[in-house]
Structures are given as C-alpha cells and as structure tokens.
Length: 188
Image 1 (cartoon, one colour):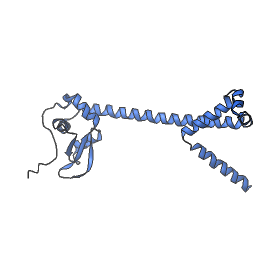
Image 2 (cartoon, one colour):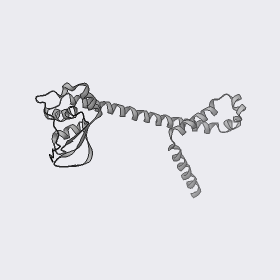
Image 3 (cartoon, rainbow, N blue to C red):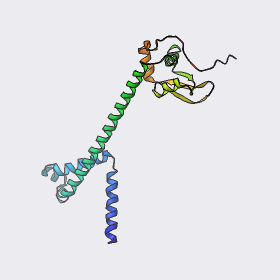
Image 4 (spheres, rainbow, N blue to C red):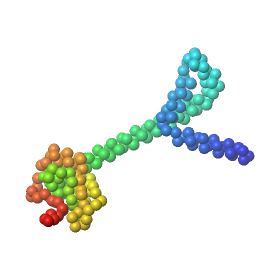
C-alpha cells in the first residue's frame, strides 16, 4: 500500500516537472513524438526506430498530445501578454496626447520651460498639484530621488511628450508666455 503511494507520488512529481518545462522543450518533445508517430514506416526502419515506435506508440501519442497542447498554451499565453502590453502602451500614448491637447495654463507654463530651454530636465516641487497632475498623466516623471522641499526635485519630460511638443508646439500657446521652474537662483 505504501509502495503504491510512493510510486504515485513519484509519478505526480515527474508530471509536475514535465509541466514546468519551457515551451521550446515542449515543442521539441511534440516534434520528436510526432515524427515517430507520423513518418512513413520505411523511413522509421531506415533510421532504426521502427521497433521503438511500434512498441511505445500509445505513450508517444500521449506525449505528443500533452506536449503539443502545453506548448500551444504557453505560446498563446506569451502572444496574448505581448498583445496586451502593446495595447496598454498605445492606450497610455493616446492618453498623453489627449492630455497634451487639453492642458491648463499652469501646466503649459511648466512644459514651456522644457522647450524654451531645450532641456529634458526641470526642477519642480513635488508638493505642487499641477506637477503631480503632469506626473500622473505620464507627461513628466521624477527622475531623481535627490532634491529638497524648498527647491524641488528633478523632473524629466517623457519621450512621447517631448516629441509631440516639438511637432505640435501650438498646444503650449496660452494667455502668457511664462516658463516655470522651481529652481531657485542662488545669486552668489
């Protein structure tokens, strides 16, 4: 009784290890088993595996089905994850462009600094709601953890926003031409 349970435990452990195989190994197993199952008998005889293929045909068929299904599931999952990531990136890009076309004057003042100074970095206060709105919309991001509460922290503009603003500078037209930075002039 205990021996049967031990054998069953070993079989289940082996089955779990097989399920953990990478898709490239599962494809290889499916390909080899498929060749042994579906190649014409004279070819199998020529390479010396006809006896093996006939003796273990049912196990080869089972291995072929299981590995083909698992490999297909792994490939399908990887493809779906890739597609979902692409769609998510596209959605984020569309949201950034939508926000850039509906900026408030305060937001435009911050973004004007990047273009007027032709720089990708600006020092801004992290406790400012306007700054945090641009960060939340992924237009700018805090690029350094070093800074201070009086002057602020370094914030860089995202690549998409940088390119879009250079292509469409009219979105920064507003009631003023003021460019905002929170970096203090030390005037030593």
